[in-house]
Length: 82
Image (cartoon, rainbow, N blue to C red):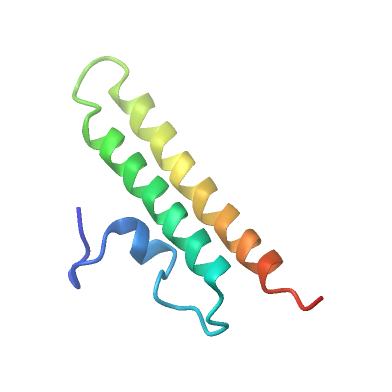
């Protein structure tokens, strides 16, 4: 699934293009995280309608939230003044 502006869900959630520090490390963190969120979405979409489909969806959504939160903390660490 992509957003109305054509970005992937992962790119949208991590605000991939927002990088005022112009840090290559921040770009890398956001790109990798966006890919992981997109993978979660792909797995969630393949969950079907079996007896454990709801559990699979729940786990994928928890993982997406955890990746998004981890990226925020890692960007903060990467941009902390030394």
